[in-house]
Every structure is written in C-alpha cells, then in structure tokens.
Image (cartoon, rainbow, N blue to C red; front, side, top):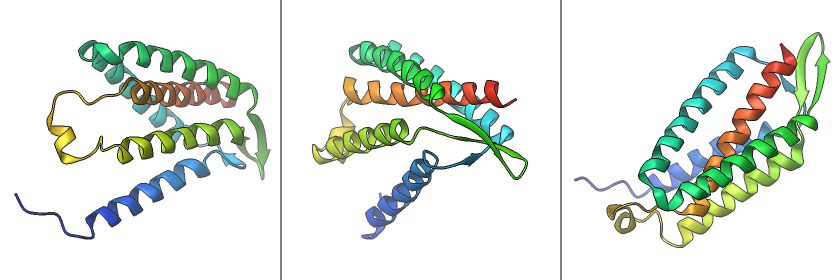
Length: 160
C-alpha cells in the first residue's frame, strides 16, 4: 500500500473546514427557499436516518444513545421551527433560521469530533479493531440527523 503524501492531512483539514463553513453559514441570515434542494435534503437525511436506525441493530451498546439523540433532535427541530421566521425578499420566498440553535449544534459537533480526534479514535490502530462507536458520538449524529430532517420537512410544509 502506497503512503499518503505529506500534505494530505492539510488538504483534508482544509476540505472539512470549507464544508463546515458552508454548513455554519446556513444558520445565519436570510436564506433563499430552494424547493428542489430541500426535497433532496429530505430524501438524503431520511436515507441516512434509516441507515442509522439499521446500524443500531448491530451496535446495541450505542442504540439507546442513538434513540435519545433522535428524540432530542426531533424536539430541538420543532423548537427551532417555532423560532424560524418566514419572509420574502424581491419576490422570492425565504426564511431566517434561529442562529443560536444551529450555532450551538455546530459547536457541539465540532467539539465532539475534536475530542474524539484528540483521544486517538481516528488513528489507524484504533480503526482496525471491531466497533469503535461511542454512545455520545452516535447520539450527536442521531440528534443532528433528526434535527435537520425535522427542519427540512417543517420548512417544506411552511413554505409550499
């Protein structure tokens, strides 16, 4: 197996940083309504949620964490929908999400990933053993998935 170039970790970090910047940017300010993108988001998040539920069958030590995270994500998504303002600009529909809810969720995710990385969960040796899934990490994944799904469906219902 060929060794990775020395600059590869830097490129991966920059790529993740760009993706995360785009994710965080969606939590602030007026966002234009894009129905096709919303439907694609609903389909993708639904498939991922089903796969996560299926994974819970094979990872019983994290299943309760996933269930708790999913319930918390649904509750937080419903709460965030109540605090999302619908508005129009230049004849185009849009919305202003609550920046605090999305921002806190984003910071929690980054903090948890940083902690897992710091503790060596993503090193090559740790990945070779069986399941390395943490209940806390999987509950955060479930919470973010369910939060995004509830937000997307709720916006679809409110903006149609």
